[in-house]
Length: 188
Ligand SMILES: [Zn+2]
Image 1 (cartoon, rainbow, N blue to C red):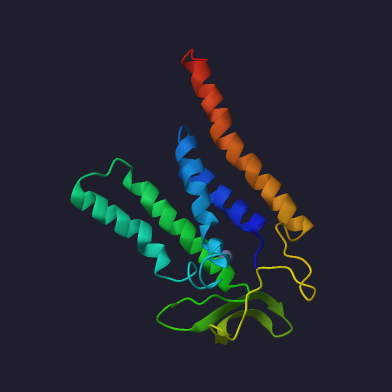
Image 2 (spheres, rainbow, N blue to C red):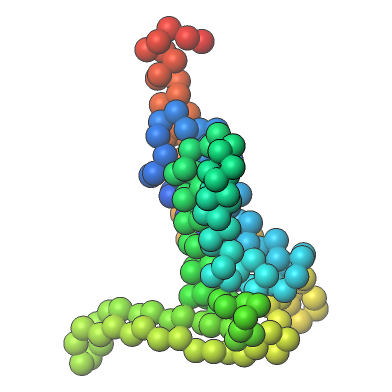
């Protein structure tokens, strides 16, 4: 699986790019939505229960219900961002070993593949998917065992550098702006 560190890094980049300067608290609130799906390791079927296309629409459904009941105090855009973060997580995983995209209506795991680059024949692109198997046939490993002695949280030096860069981007975006704002307005 793409490591938790990589999911976290992309979530931080996304939030830093689409929220306003003084949105630090909403950013912290939205952060878990980029990581949430992996909790299906503990409840249900990993890469299925919280990694399907339907999960993506839950924040939007919630928004519609709250609007109908006229009890919504949270800005609409935060619900949309929550949905997008869920989607990013699932599609990232789909490109890495695959996910049960249509679970519980289909038991198939979809593993997307993409490649773009130069070959001896010239510029070449590949987009395809393979179906490695069904629920029950493939086990996405969630517990280290003698055959799988480790589960990466940050899988490589590249991921570590990307994560550090993402953390810096995130905190510079919100914290520095926050401090500047307070200074300008004479607050402490
Ligand atoms: Zn995942």
